[in-house]
Image (cartoon, rainbow, N blue to C red; front, side, top):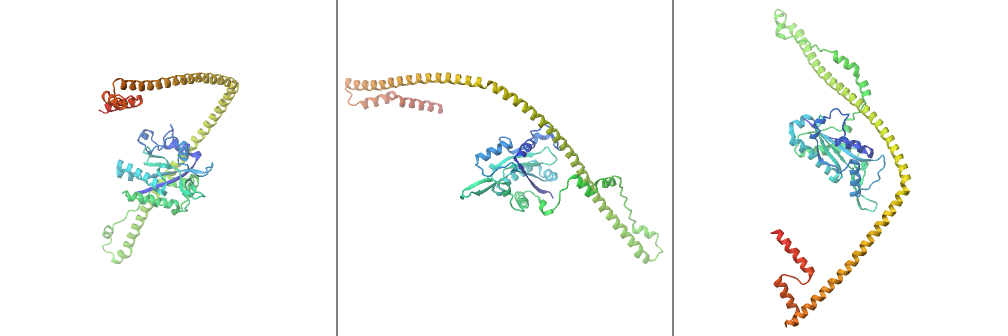
Length: 415
């Protein structure tokens, strides 16, 4: 049976750049030799970060007004690594594998009432030995301030404050995945097993690595052949039955028992050989990581030297041109201010003139209507205006006429 696996890591602000480049596959080369770059195009995101993890953290912190004091040594983000084993993913197929990770994503959103808004990124990797999900989130707790107001606060220690936090996480994750139709067993958390973690050097001493490896390479198990009782009886035809029961049968039983014990021993030695192979693989990966780390340190020192050199040159150029740039800025500023002042004055004069023309136009129209009414004996001015507007579909008021024409055009476009 396969296990429901979820593991948590805590990160400080200084770690975010590295895990961003690894999770989002921004590096050109990787020390992890299990990554097959030709399959990296198969990776996909359940939640895509807008920016880098560092900038995304600051964006979310400001947008949701997250409280909490952040120091250099503070853990400000956590990462769940969610997976199972290859046999499980091969048995459920591609579509169910995708549903497995999407279901796990929903679990994280709901667990401890975290909320999807506090997830920085969720990336599924299919370019390594086993499919797995990297889910990075901000450990936010929902609490109250001293005045009793509800607040959201970044507090990793409070998010994982219970002594059995990881056992609770394992229990909740297992129950959630099983309730959603995945046939899995619950993994055993580290806090229950009390297993110690050793580095490779100590591991080799404890397991007598070199000596065991040499013995395994040279060892050939020769299991004794168990003689069958019927063959023995051919030579015992004239012997007393007591000899068969008291000597032959007990001997057969001893040989059979030794045979089974040797089979068990062979299985145990094979398992130890697998552990040793895994330890060798770990040592190679560790050496590669150390070499890459040393190279990165050299590159950082070189970049720091180049940065200081360029920074000094920029400071020198800026100090020499500072007065010249300030003078040029003042001249440009005065020129633009004078230019726009004249333009604004001109527009104000034109605006005043237009107001006078419009006022005169209204006055003229009013006098014209009054004259027409008297000339042609029209009893009321409003009747003349009403008839004119209905027959010509034209308003005397220019603003009403413009709105009318606009509605007509919109109506034509709809048709």
